[in-house]
Image (cartoon, rainbow, N blue to C red; front, side, top):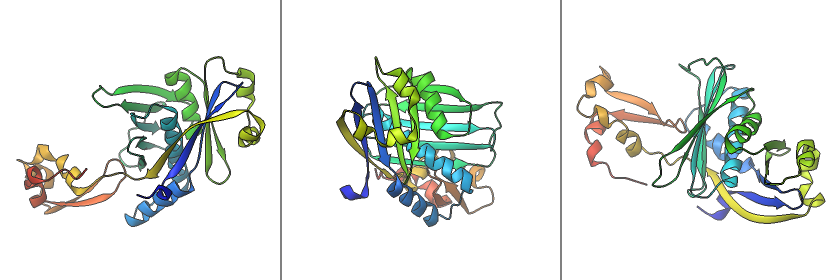
Length: 261
């Protein structure tokens, strides 16, 4: 991919306030997201579509605030509307992707956000937090309070621009808590700042027919349990909802598939 194919996410230190600002303009990511939905005949209801986009933005900002080597996945189980939001991404592999689950969703007694962080050669770290609303920007605030053990606030500015302000030790609490959208939009004009780094992301999953078939290895010797009377099955990628057509021969050849990563 060419550099211009990616969205740049900036990490900026706000001097004298001791806060980290992470910001990005997500129009290109959203364009790729909609092309993906169109290519695979996926349509989400308007409200849920916007919530998923907000969740993708929140995870991307959080990934940029975290160490490079982490791959993070979030699942939000929401009561009303009854839906699961899924988003995952990696700074190293420079992708963000996600989807909705609207069928056969368990109704929880409260809203929960589940987070799994994976780094190479280490056991995944998981956390579960209760979130009070169906707003992904508020999920991020709750996540930082409960899991990151430091305050964090998210803001949605015009033109698909999102900003995370994350507190650092000895931060200016009064300034932090008093921030509004207008102030956040002018931080680099009004405050002394230092650019730390820039990461880049693209809406992409990396799934393939070979990878989907490998997940079915448990049925290799009992295809009837999987296919029943059907000669073919349509399966969705659990990460991006792309549809794959699987037949019995594909399952039988599973051990011959080569990794296309």
